[in-house]
Each structure stands twice: as C-alpha cells, then as structure tokens.
Image (spheres, rainbow, N blue to C red):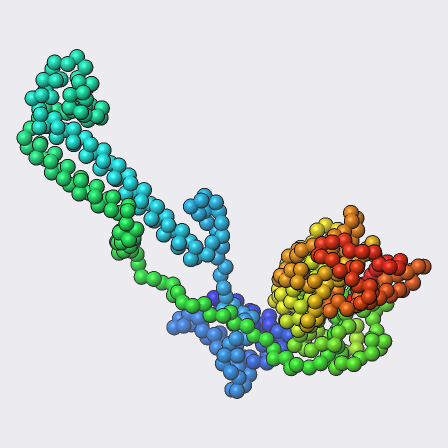
Length: 492
C-alpha cells in the first residue's frame, strides 16, 4: 500500500473531475462523492520515521459506525486490495491447466508417491542384480577347486561353468573376471555378510512397495527432514478469507417510474401511475421501457452482442428532462448497441432468446454486475439479434414462440433450460433464412400475436383455448402456421 496512492484516490473520490471528452462528471462519480463525503470529514498523512505508514481518517460524526466508516474506504481505495494469482501449471499429464491450491497439493502428493515408488523399484532391481552376482560368487567360493579345474580344462570356460554349476551367463562372466584373491577365506565371509544385508534390504524394499502406509511414513519423514534442512519461519499469514469490503449508499425503498428510450436516454419520475402520454422524448426517439419500479431494484441491459450490464435504479437521474445517456453509466463493447432492458426484482425469472431459435430461462440477478463493461451473458452467432425478454410469471406452465414465417409453437416450460447464461437450447426449429421473432411464457390458456396485416396495418391475432391444441408440440419443433395472414412482431 502506498500512502500517496490512498490520498490521491480519496481526493479523486471527493473532488472528481470530468472524464476525457465529458463536460460534467458522471452519475457514478456523483454517487461515490456523496458516499465518501457522507462519512469522511478530513484525512491527514502523519507518516514519519517512527511510523512509516500512518494515515489519520476522521469520520463526519461521532455517531458514525467504525465498521461502516472503514467499509466505505476499504471498498473504494487501495487500503484493501486483492492480488489475483493465475495458478496455471503443467501437471503430471504434461498439459497446462489452471488448478486450485488443493488440486496442486494433491497432485504433488501423488508425484511424491510415484517418485518414491520409482526410486524403490530401481533400488530393488539393483539389490536383485547384486544378490544374483554374489550367489554365483558363493558357489565359486565353496567349490573353488572344481571351478579352477573346469576353467583350466575347457576351451570355452563360460559355457562349461554354466553347464556344470547351473550358473547364469551373468554369474559365469563375473566369476571369469574376478581375481583369485577375491575368493580367499576372508572374502567369503564378506560375501556372506553382504548377501545377508542385501536380502534384509530386499525384504524392506518389497514391504515398502506392498504397504501404502509404510510408504506414507517414509514420505512424511523425508518432508520433515527437508523442512528442518531448508525451511525457515513462515512470513505470510494464512487464515480464512474475509469478505471483500463493500459499501453502498443506503437507498430508501421508494416507488419510481423508470423511463428508458430506444436511443438510450434514461430517467426516473417519482411515484407510480404516471400516464405514458405525458412522457416526452427527444425528436425521433421512442420508448423502450416504461416500468413502475422501486429504487432498490436493478435496471439490467443486454446489448446486441449478448453482453449484460446493470445499474441501480437509485443511481438513475430523476426529473422531467430527457435524462442521461445510458453510455455515461455503462460501457458498451465496440459495435454493440442497446437491445433489451429489464427492471425487476433480482429473483424474477425471464425467458431470453435470440433470433437463431436458441434460448434459456435466467433470473434478473444473473445479469447483475458491478463492472461498467458488463459481463458475458448470451452467446450469439453472427447475424442473430437479441429478442425482447419475456417475464416468466409464478406458476407458468408453457412457453410460446412465433417465427418470421408466421408459425406458432407451444411447449411445456419444463422443456426450457434454466441457466445463468450461455446459448441455451433450441426453442423452435426454423427454416433456412428464417428467424425467431418473439417468445412468451405463461399459463398457456391463450396467446396474442401482434404484428402487421395487409397494407402494413397493425393487427392482433388471438389463439384461444379451442384452437391452441394444434400448436402444442415439443421444444425444437417448427410449430404450425397461424390461421390468418400476419407479419408477427411480438407475442404475449
């Protein structure tokens, strides 16, 4: 932590400057300024030779809770910071992979067992080879006269030794290469002692390979010895992670009407029951979402590439003006535009779909993010567009889809997949070049298709309980044609 950095961050929060290309500070900057000034009176740097880092922070009032006071500063300055660690490693399979600490420790333990096993088997092979050689030397020692006579009388001593004494080729070769003095009486005693030691060692090595507990004790002993030889006192404290400090302005739960235009201008008006006819927009602009909401709700947005963004309704500017452009509150990705908007409680479920026929059910809370740049939500293919999300009411039993070719499909809501993002499943089968136009969820007693009839006139087509059965099929089917000619635009 740098004292200068913390003081600079507090100054930027309490005295924000407009960003490059802006004339005024953003709504987010105004919110953070109000948040910090609401709890902080003064800040002083008292760092000295006696105290390398000492920052004095005085709260606005003596009634301010110390926990809440520090939560605000920890959340928005580098007084508390986290360091990301990319735990990518090459595992025992030789492939790079991101692994957690527990997985790494487990793999290291498996590696230690494999290492000790290989080492033990290698030593066991060496012991077996040495025992085999010494067995041959012991035969030669006990029958030295016969061995010498066999070598002296034979043109090919090696095959002769093998045939007469039942030796292996390795044993015969070793006997031919040793010096006679190595077969002296004292050397025989040494051979016998080495054989005894090697046979005892062989039993221990074999027991180690056969007994997992014995190998575990060896590994623990070696780790302890290495720790004594190479270890030092721990300098990093390891403890349960504390939740990252978060601080927000306490927002009263009040009724407001949220107004969002197609061109991305957003504002709120106090209270409910506002006549939509009294709401004005900029020239050439139209309403996208007019919703009776609460100040504690989130406003979630989906861009044309399927990325999700969120804003607290309490942070949306109020008044009777045109509001503020949504781009001052979120940062759309390059080439993306506002495609859909929802304002509801985080627990509310919605059906999300793209024109390619895929979709899924997710909760509003799944779209909420603190990042201005949003987060990946819907997976879209090139040329697809995001459809208007459909609210899934309590007790909904059916999903309906209508295609560009005026075909309607209904199926049980249980066939739709519930997930927090992605591409989902095929909701409706489409012909080549055809697009899904709208989706809806409900009790399935009746559906209303809105669109354009002849001469481009607005038209509504109701599918009642008597006619709905022919459209009830399974998910991913193409459905059936509507009874009247219409260019579908929406479905409810």
